[in-house]
Each structure stands twice: as C-alpha cells, then as structure tokens.
Image (cartoon, rainbow, N blue to C red):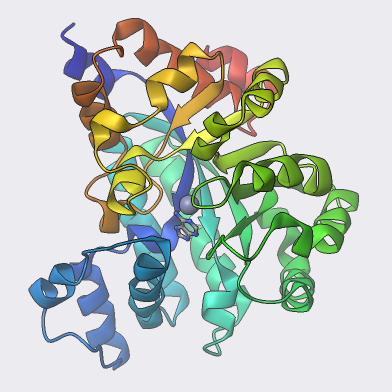
Length: 327
Ligand code: ADE
Ligand code: ZN
C-alpha cells in the first residue's frame, strides 16, 4: 500500500502516552462544568490558543491546569475511554499509559479514585475495542523523593493495577539520582522501571537512568545522539527509546520535523519507537506522529515503518507469548 495507508493500518503499540495529556479542551470544559471547577480560560478556543509552548515547562504549566478538572472516578474513566477510542482508530492494539497520581493527590483526589477510574477504562477497552493495556505510575521529578515514597505507599494497596513506575515532569535540575532510593524499592517490589531522560536534559541523565535507576526503557532519549559511547551502549543492549516526534517539535527540542533524529536513531541500530506523549496538546495522536515524521524525513520508508511497529511490540511489557502473536 501507499506509505500513509501502511502507517495508518499497521498494528502497533503505544508506550509513551500521559493519560492526562489526552484530555482535549472540549472534555476539559465539559468536566469543569460537571464538577463546578472555574478555569482561567473563557472558552475552548481561548484554552487552545494558549497551547503555544516554548519549552517543557511552558507546556507543563498548562497541562497541570488542564488536569485540575479531574475529580471523580468517572472523570478518569471518561478521559481514558476517549483515548482508547482514538488509539483503536489508529490501529493501536496495546497501550501502556502513564498517570501522575501526585497531580491529583495534591488537590485532595485520592489515588484510589484515579486508579479505579483508569482500571475500569482498561477493562472496557479490552472488551469493547480489543485494545490491551497497562498502567505505569509516574513520580513527578520536580517534587521530592520523600513525596515519591509517600505516593508509592498510597498506591501499593492497588499494586495489581499498575505494572511499573516512571519519572516525568521538569527534567533539568532534577537528575535521575534524586530518585535512586525509591526506584530501588520499586525494583524490590517487582515493578517494571522506566524514566524520562534526555528530552531536555543531557546525555548524562540517560546514563544515570540506566546505571542508577536501572530502567528498562528510556522515555524520549533523543539527546543520547550527542554521545557516541551512549549510542553504542543503547544499541548493544537494545535499550528501547520511546520517541515522541510531535512533542519534540512543539517543545522545541527540534526546531522542525525535518531536523528530527528518528531516522538517525534507527540507522544507528537503536530500538526506537514512535509515540504521542500528550496528544491533546501536541497536535495529534499516534498515526499523526507517524505521518508527519515520515513526510518530513525522506530516509523513512516501508522498511522503517515495519521496524518501528516491531520495536513497539518488542519494547512493550507484554508477555513473551503475546509478543510472539504480534510479531
Ligand atoms: N509530563 C507530560 N508530558 C511530559 C513530557 N513530555 N516530559 C516530561 N513530563 C511530562
Ligand atoms: Zn512524556
């Protein structure tokens, strides 16, 4: 088939999606109305007009404001179901969703409310859409390691509902080392480990995510290409990198899509995958990421499309038996 049809139609897994980043402006306003929350924006259009980001922090400020409308279990369910429907339309057959409990517990929403709503959406997505999924609990790195330990404690009664933990929010000035103890504890508990590293932060943060946190995937990791020794290691270990092209352009990690390093990463033998990060904020869901990246980078063709789909299954936390059925 023609390349866009191939990209749209091929089965794929999404491994880097913050579920709070799938909250569309229309749903933000609907939930604000339902919950009696006052927003600092007059309309859906006024909110969307504020989505002009200059860096990661300028995005995070608006992303946390958007999440302030989430109060009840049904809100988390509705948000996740809207994502699962969009994902299924993009031929996503498996999704691993990040969620940020601290964004909600800081506003008095119990972690139980968050997890129960998301867990119910997972079950419904499996039944009604045939999309399998997992949840990954993320610690906010701009908060303290003590706060991360408290969050872990609050979430452990719901341990069966999440497969692993991650690390997100403001990267610069908050290196992986800050969370060495809490990640060590999560490792003892048998949780799978991932972390955002090398998005805005330097290659040194990717090294310490690997060596200190002992993560099994690097989220973003695009700045790894500045360090040839790191690239060699990532390739040798087939360490997955969950790359988010539209996010990288919107947050000015790359000025234009034509400058994106995805093709170079595949060329270097890295286990790169394509993901949407925060699709409601960055201009599109998974297939939009594939289409725009392949349009802008002439080195990407059908072989790279299949490679990226296979990488997404290989890098997932699904069982070996399930991976065999996909690949
Ligand atoms: N939280 C949501 N999206 C994020 C990103 N791209 N980087 C860090 N933290 C995030
Ligand atoms: Zn992210």
